Image (tube, rainbow, N blue to C red; front, side):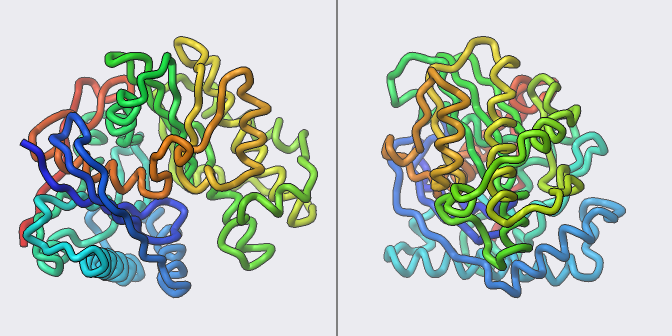
Length: 367
C-alpha cells in the first residue's frame, strides 16, 4: 500500500528545516512531491550552537537541562511552523498525509557510548500538526551496537535503481558531516561517514566573515590550500577505519587553522573535505564509476571542482543534474524511512551502520 509521507530534516549545518513530500510503499518511490524550507533565525541558530556545547555533558539521552530545554522547544516550534507553511502553500490538508518522518536536531552522536541525541518533542509536534509523527530513528540501531548513521542509504538505493546505469555508484551527501552510499546492483549497499562536510567551513566563515557559509565556494576559489595542514589533518585515525563508521559534527572541531586569511582558510577546509571523501575509495570493494553529490556541498562549485580532480576518471555530478532535489533529499529520505518504519522494514544494515542484523526503528507519536 502506498503512503503519502512528509519528511522533515534539520541537519548538522544548523541552517533550517527541510520539508519534502513523497508517495512510497517503503520499497519503491512512486512519486516525489513538492519540497520546502524554513530557515532558522539567528536567535535559533545561537540556541542550537549553545545546545551543541552543553549536550557534551548530558547524563542520559532524554535529559534536557538548561539551554537544551529551550532549544528543544525552538526546534519543535520551527518544525511545526515549517509543516503549517508547507501545507498552506501547497493546499494540503493534514488528512492528506499518512505519516510524518521527524528526524529532530542532532546535538550529540556518540555511538561508542550508545548515545545519540536528537532534540525535538515529537508528541508536541504531532498535536500541533494533527498528523502521526515517526521519530527517534537512530536509537534502536545504536542500542543494538550500530553507529546509528547514516540512515539515508536505503533511500539512495531506491533512487539509484531508477537510473539504470552501470555501477558502482556512490551518492555523497555533503552536509555538516559528509557521508557516502555505495551501491552496486540491488544487493550491495555500503555506507559510512567520510569526515567533515561543511561544518568546519561554515564555522570558519561565521567566525571570520560573519557569513553562514561559503556561497558557491567563492571565498575558497580566491584562496590557496595549505597542503601540509590538510596532510596533518588526514592523519586522524578515523580516515583509515573501514566502513561502516560515523562521526559527530564536532569531532574535528579541535583542528585549528594556523594564522591565514579567510580565503586561504576556506580553500584549505574545502580541500580537506574533498580529500577526506576521496580517502574512502581504497576502502570500497570496487572503484566507483560515478559519484552523485547532494547536500549543501553540491552548490559549492569549488568543492565540486576539487572532487572532480581527486576522483577522476569517475564522473562527479550534482544530484540536481539528474532531476533529484539535492536540498530535499534528506527530508525525502526521512519520509521514506517513516514509511519503512511503519511497515517494520529495515532502516539500517550491517554494511551501512555496523548493526549486527538488519534493524527497523522509529517510534510513533500520535496527535
